[in-house]
Length: 116
Length: 115
Image 1 (cartoon, each protein chain N blue to C red):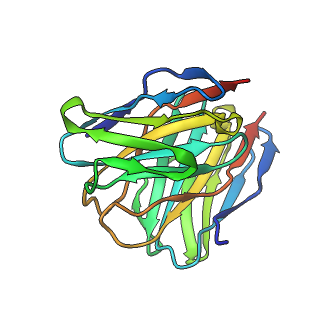
Image 2 (spheres, each protein chain N blue to C red):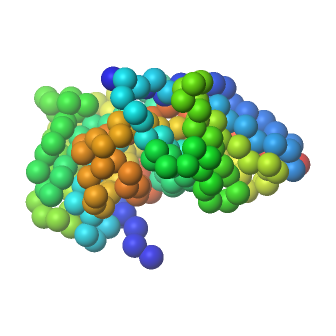
């Protein structure tokens, strides 16, 4: 049963610290998304990649957030320095081809981040 | 630009009663529409999707939704609620033939099923 995995599942850190979240997309999926979920803003798209290349990161605060795909099996989302307002659940999702918008996005279980 | 409005952030139904969760969309081009469900402390799971084939779409767990272009709606229904249906439900839209596949989500509806 293929699924998206995310680590860590929970992270508590202090303001100013660096946070790295990792995602392993489903093998063979060529598109990876990062979302953030908060009570106030709901689900927001932060960034997404196709074939490891960043396509859009306009939803991401550029000064402190960065997203990369070092290889096809790993996507990372880094926050440096972290702030209390970054506290949220961060989801990774992956999707296979084709490229007509009909394919399903498969979500990971999320990383719950708390910044004190 | 596209957007989704989910009417009612909280809906309560009795077990065995009809479930109706409302979703209205706005899109300047033909849309694809999705319903996702999120159980506590889990990621989102696809329930069903409309991709311009049949307007009545059947999904998992007995849910279905009907695309009504004239009403710009894609409401989710289930004839008889089960306790296990208690979760948060999200409607989402993307543009048809959008190679970027960006989803825009609604704010979600929390469904409570009363015994």
